[in-house]
Length: 224
Image (cartoon, rainbow, N blue to C red; front, side, top):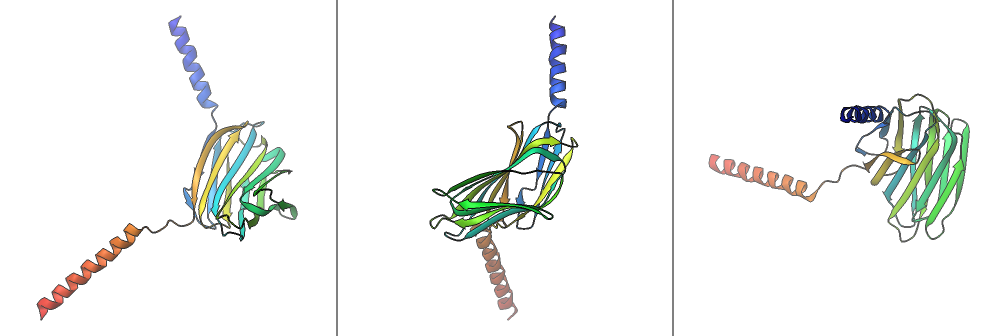
């Protein structure tokens, strides 16, 4: 009986692993114009799939802001699709979804710095020229928080790659999450903008230059 239980347990472990959805997201940091790739493996048809992009961006108080995914490659279709946008610390807001000659655009004013909209959109396979959110920042806000979610019932190949180019931001973070049937499968925080040069690096470089100067001066003195 004990041996039979061990065999059944091993079978459950093997089948559970085989049915797992695998996700890989690259890279760790992007600057304006860089590409993000999301590799998916063993994603079954009929899964309620969600791609969620949560951003926190540096902003100018009272100024304009924008964040977009351009050339978003969607390798499968999402039936009963929706695009959800949530924004925080904003005064006015716009959501644009553009694919070829087709464009959907919605906007509005925030209430207490918050804005939310859900749009029913036919999310077909192919390349989307732009999915963008933008608007103006509250007069006293230095950061804007955004959430952009594409959701639908997945139909297509089990192994696929989603990719898009980041546009419009130079500092902050972007957290990319993949959900299946409302369960979060994988998430990754991506740094936005070039890494800052630390004070230690600067002082270290200055010290090296100073030492070289002393050595050159000593050599010149000895030659006299």
